[in-house]
Length: 106
Image (spheres, helix red, strand yellow):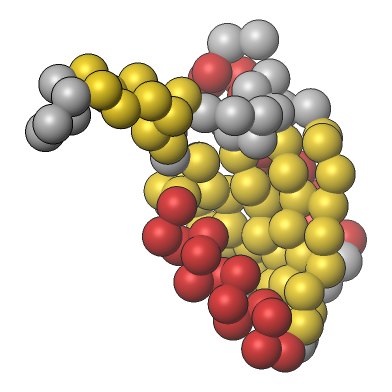
């Protein structure tokens, strides 16, 4: 699937989550590449890749954050719910390791 059509699919999914589940806000985030192999002192060779999850859709409803994990073509790989202090830790980690694509608010 082409990346543009994947983004359209993700935006439609985020709109549906916002409308049907009455969420406060929904973020679509792209996962950054991570270095998997370094060779050399300064590293002369640096290999980067994305493993498994390419996109995250973070849905905030009250005190609960639900994170949907999506693959390269937009297929769902699962979801997790986070509350309280765990939610804050996970959200700061998500902000650090991803880039924002879109944000929808009610």
